[in-house]
Structure formats: C-alpha cells, structure tokens
Length: 433
Image (cartoon, rainbow, N blue to C red):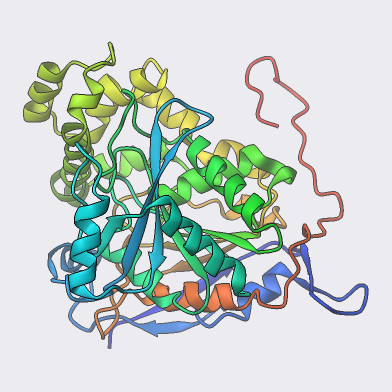
C-alpha cells in the first residue's frame, strides 16, 4: 500500500480567531482550527496511487495523464487595467457551465481583437456579465477564494481545476493569472516576478471593497504560494486577507537552485523542465517584451538552445528586467524567508519531504516562533501531484475542508497579544524588520 503521513510543526501558542454571533470572548486558536481539518492533523495517513510510489512517477503521471475531460471548470475572464503598475492582468471567475452552442456563440462575440484565444471552457466576459458574477457572489453567504497558480501556469492547469472544482458550493472562486500566463496578453514589456505582488494586492483590495463582509482566503500553488508569502509580509497587520493555504511553495530560492543542480533528477529531469516552462512563457510573450531594452530576442533564442539551467535565463533576463544585477541577488531578494516574521495573516503550509523542485529546508524553527503559521509536511506526494488512487490531487479535498472550517469565524483580525519581531542590529547592512 502506498501511503503518506502528515507531520505538523506549529507554535506553542497561536493567534486566536474570533467567532461569529457568539458571546464576547468566544475564540478558537488558529492551530486548533487547522488541526481539526481532516488531512492536517498530526499523524494523519492518506493513500496515494499504488503505482505512483516515487516522486518521479507522481510528477510524470501528473504531466502525462489525460485530464482534459476531468474537472470541467468554466471560467469568465476579466481583463483588469492595473492602477498600480502599467499594463493589464487577468482574473478568471469560476462560473456556471454554459450550453455548448451558447458558449460557442458567446465565445466568438466576446473575443477581443488581437488577443489570444483562451483554453477550453474559458471566455472573456463583458462588463455586464462580470457585474452579474459580483451580484451572485453578493447574494450568497460563501467566502471568497482567490487562487494563485504555479510558475508559468494559470487557471487552465489540472492542479488548479482540481481545487476549483472541489470548492464548488463552498466558496466563490477566482484565479488570478500572472501577467503573460494562461494566454493573457501583456501590453507593457514586463511580465511577473517573485516580487511583483501589485496585481495580487490590487485584486484583494478590489474584492474587499466589493464584498467588505466576506472572508477572503488565498490559495497558492508552488510559485503562487511564494507570491502570497511576499504579499502578506508586505501587508503586515494591514492585511484584509482572512487566511492563506499554500501547497508546494518555497521559502528560499537560493537553496532551491542548489536542489535543481545537486542531483541527477534535478540536473537532467526537473531542472530542464523548469527551464522549458520559463522559456515557453518568454517566447509566447516575446513580441511584447522586445520593447524592453533589457530583452534581446535573438540572444534569448540562442541562450535557450545552449543553457542547461533556469538560473541562466534568470541571470540574463529575469533579474535585469526585474531590476537586479544577477540571478542570485534576485533569488535572495525574492525569498520569503527574509520577511517571514512580517506576516500577520493565518497561513497553512503544505509541503512534501520528497519535493524534487524545491529545497526541503523548510522554516521549522521560524514556524515554532510564529503564532500565525501552521506547517504540515508529508513524506510522500511530490511537488503538486499527491495523486491518490482515484487520480485526483489528494490536497484538493483538504483545501475544501479547510475553507469550510472557517464558516463560524469572524472577519475581524486575529488576536495575537501584540506579537512583534524587531531587528535591533545591523540595520545599516540589511533592514529586515
């Protein structure tokens, strides 16, 4: 039998969540709420697919299996002109299915000129249709879940659709696509990075203004979780986010690079795979990027033919475009571990000890000292796979049950007894807190 076991790392005292419609002082510790969720309790054992007993098999199956007829989620896409950084990004709302004939007609009618055609069951929504989505959200008592995808992915990915489909009837769901991803069109010569949290911040602010009484939960997969960490750290105690749940997300990009170069699987399988993802995103957005003086298309194409590691692309293009002199300095600045104690929002982190894409140097010591964090580590599951005997991603049900567990929790900020971390020395060298 192919099973995996959860081990929990948590602080001795966690923040207290205030409950709705209860007597004054009625609270529940965040760690107690998290550990009450099936799959997040210490020692929980769950089944994985019996034939996928190694992280390589889990990862390869996820990439090769046909999920085209599974998790048939429909999306309505909104193009948002950013108010904080020049350009636009896209937000995909999970919407009710349409009749195929009607969908085809609406797809043709709403397709903007010179914009990419979208993935199956996804079409652009008109302003009136988006307003109707907002009205339907306002009319129900469900929380909001905003999902952030992995590197180069988007709402179309099977791991995203698995979670979105499980949240049907539990939450109002939308997926924020990073610039240039999921067939989004870039209108300025920049895409995304580990430090570009402005689109996420703008989306959260918009949703909070539209629905001030609703909980807002963030769910991040891989790179999307890293962006969530950095965003929550920037927000600190100003955060209007109720909680976050991340899967397979990194805290230290410097150590991740060592993992991808430090063994045969990383060197010859996973490293090249990540390189291909990043290269594909650059190539699909090349016509928009050529206006950037730091991007040379011919040089990029030549580098893609000769380079072995994603760090070579990051060193020559991602870092300079983002404003850093090298990949290493970009990785260091983008690593959330530097600002982990600035987070003031409850976060559940699910990570695997056999994850082949990121370092397993997870922040155990920091979590034990941080009342807002709760970390569950599995000993099998790979990165974002966790393929169970049915072929589903095991964690999708855990995310659903976690969001449902917040039903009786107030939207008021948690009580943390004045939790504060202050840097007292070497602030002239590096200012962290």
